[in-house]
Image (cartoon, rainbow, N blue to C red; front, top):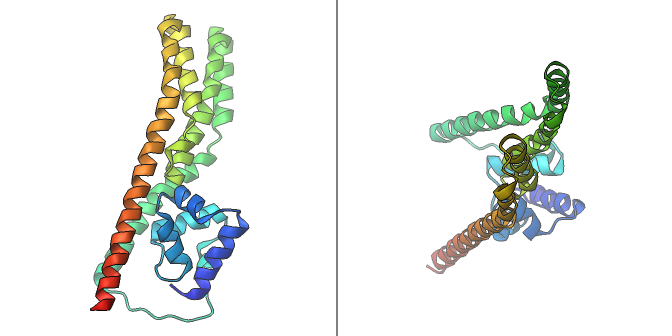
Length: 214
């Protein structure tokens, strides 16, 4: 990676009050990977560049701009891989653009319709629990972080449905016991992934050192 870009990554991270560990957690990678980017020893892949640009609220051009002109011939395989990544990213971008859909307005309209026609003002109000659930799903997908999912709101929605429609207030309340379990599982999974990436980086560094010795 160009040292100018590496320095820019350091500046952007610090200006957003993020440590290398915090940034690595948001991206779902190891701290060593972030450190390599900032030392210009490695480059982020396309997916991580997109996530960095969104996280720092800058364009990819601004993130990668440099005064040096670098001409790198692309092989056919590299072009095919780039095309596949672009198709995947365009698919995700379609999902993210859908977040601009006025879901609160739609839910309000639906609420007034079922209220006026069916008189279901109660329990129709539980519809207003759906927008934060939907928005948190999109955020979790965008950040690749299940901790962003509003699971407590989802649990409340399920509990209200069980109680209002089926009268299962008991044992429906048990759903709330799954909240700490959900976060424990997600954090455990992220820690395991982080440990795996860290180990892989160390093995890669060890292999590189042995190659240099040879």
